[in-house]
Length: 362
Ligand code: SF4
Image (cartoon, rainbow, N blue to C red; front, side, top):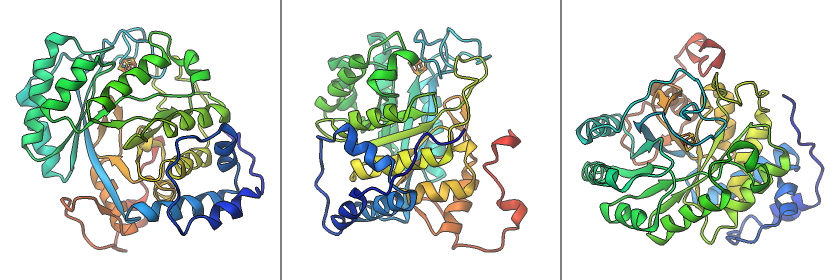
């Protein structure tokens, strides 16, 4: 699909660039028009601005690497229109009950062995039941003892559940806003936008780092992408991690027939997230399978500095870990934490070996 952004040579470009050399103020009062002006900047100006800001807070040649495990799969009562785990859609997904703690820890050990520094555990729940909490807390404890950072996504949380997770050692809680408040009702009807903001509030209050972002390519407008980033950037604290997902169109879900989402619009979304939330990790999440290596490189240049590593993202495919490492090596990117064994950039791989992330092959 063609981009719905038309660039204008904006007078704000030079003033933005002019303000880069000093550290930009961390703002929480972005207006819709200010954010939209970034989206409509000429592409090169936008990427240059994002890269300059990125370098003020992060090593531009380092990417944080996490592993994601589905600890309870499918049969979710919610109606998120993009999600194969909703019980409302026939996607052929095999339902799996909550995993045993030992099995989760075995996966965490394997993730550590392949170099991940953070282990994320996701359960397809509307919200966790209190009777499930002891098992979930044991998982957090166990993963933490392995020396990995811990992250969970379990649906909506009540304050006491957020506190319990914090006390067990949870470092991050993921709960996405998905899209703008205006478009939200087109995508989910079983929980409100405010429900999501409330969960993020409880997580923040409990002292857990917030991981929150959204999904693009769901048929939303440019104004909706602006609205999503405005919500995230104007939180009392920026989420420490901001996952930007490109819709994975899963057969059987109501969004299966969405048009392709324009690659440049995706890269623009990453760049604007980087500019608005300079100290946050911007995570390239679902949809990487549909991005070629050149697009990955551009997205890293736009300021994305975190990825999920491994062949599956909850229930949808993800590039194989060795493909990511090969690209890291070719681009001179290091995995944060230094746990992953990397070879120096190599020119030896053949052209054929280099063509990967080819969604058409899947
Ligand atoms: S996105 Fe989460 S809450 Fe929504 S249907 Fe899927 S598993 Fe359930």
